[in-house]
Amino acid sequence: MKKWWQILWVSKEEKELEQKIALRKDEDRIANKVVDSINLKQHEIATPDPDDLTIENAYKTRWIWYHTILGGLMFFANIIMLGIFILLAVKL
Image (cartoon, rainbow, N blue to C red; front, side, top):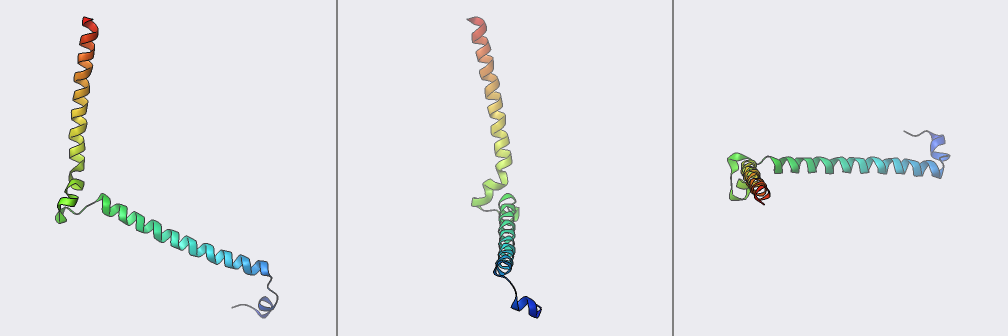
C-alpha cells in the first residue's frame, strides 16, 4: 500500500520506471512461457511414443538405424573408391 506522500508527490519519472519494471516482468513471464512450450514441443518431436506407432512417426522411431546403415555404406563406398584411386595411381 502506498503512503499518502507517495500518492501526492510521485514524479513522472518514478511512474514511468514502475511501468517499465511491470512491463519487463510481463515480458519475462511471457518469454518463459514461450521457451517452456518450445522445449515441450522439442521433447515431443524427439521422443515419439512407440506404442502410438503410425506411418507418420515410424520414420522418427527408426531414423537412428537408417542413418547408421547409410553412414556405414558411405564409409565402405569411400574405402572402395580410395582403393581404386590408389590402384590407378600406382599403375599409371
